[in-house]
Length: 471
Image 1 (cartoon, helix red, strand yellow):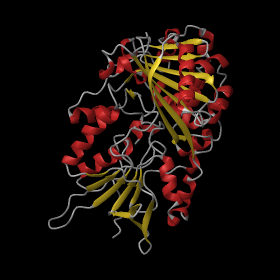
Image 2 (tube, one colour):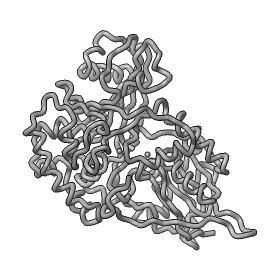
Image 3 (cartoon, rainbow, N blue to C red):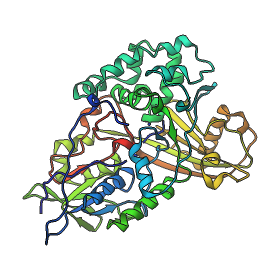
Image 4 (cartoon, helix red, strand yellow):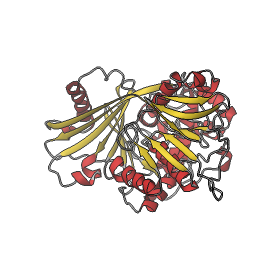
């Protein structure tokens, strides 16, 4: 049966490290919704959601509330957080409302951050809520501490605001700015080389996972506006006091299961089954099994979705899905290190660039963030390297050595400390690469197939950021 009534794909969902409503003129797209309340004597509509990360759980959450019978399909044994997702920024009101609804308290207080280059500390960010509010973007210029960045360099960011204002999140604006790289945009705007290297480059690498010369100017403008420039307090963020899977996803999933959600873990979607007579999707194929439903939401990462498309001849024949095969992905490596002594790390969250072009990286002081590590005599640090294809062939010891040498350049107290335990996680092709020219290949939440929808941080959204709020 083909169910052609539009779904409400309004997920609560998943964000990058570095953020109440945005100005209305930045909105685009359409909102779709369906009433799932069954009439007397009729069965509830069934929806299958593929992907059990932020996007999948959020889609399932919304659909369960609408009254649908939902099956959530996850490749892991339980819901899993995507790599590169750390901060919960000020506008993530959907997630803050979610944890209130679940009755949990998983977050730290508002957290300070720092940027590092190979030369040392470049920027220290305060908690902006604690500062007198200034009109955007002057709070971002006035309140961070720039130990080595002169005021004259900071002021060269002002012309960049012209492009931010011009970028109104319309199709026209995306096509105009998506054709150029972020590096080209900053150069055209007269941004000083020092400001670019010490402030904007780290921000781009942390939020979009690649250096400015490899990132779309449109994606960068959307990120800058949403995370940093729309309101001063948007630069404030919280962190989870433990693993997101344990603190948020596990109680979230249990809550949904109590409301009727069926969760199929360790199940990998490989393709879609089609009803050629109706041009509708009839099932999600997972190896030998086919999970049938009335409607489907693909909420996995870009790379798994591309695999599904390659294995589905009908999808490949449709231009909107064939376009997705042109999109690129980025390799990420995450390293958790236990050191044999207490190390003073000034800020819990830290962003770094310029160490290993084209890699940007972040590191977090889990000893001060996670409840489980607070009283330990050791220091636990987690570092994530983005655009890390050159690190993938290395063995664990080589990767740990690389991470340790970088940490010493940022904080001298790491000198002389010994790694007594380690955990290396390789995540090839795990996040979208927002290359210049990518926009024309992206999809909106609804597709030309009437019962197939998509969700994730790579789809065309209403506000220009690529984050938990957009899923």
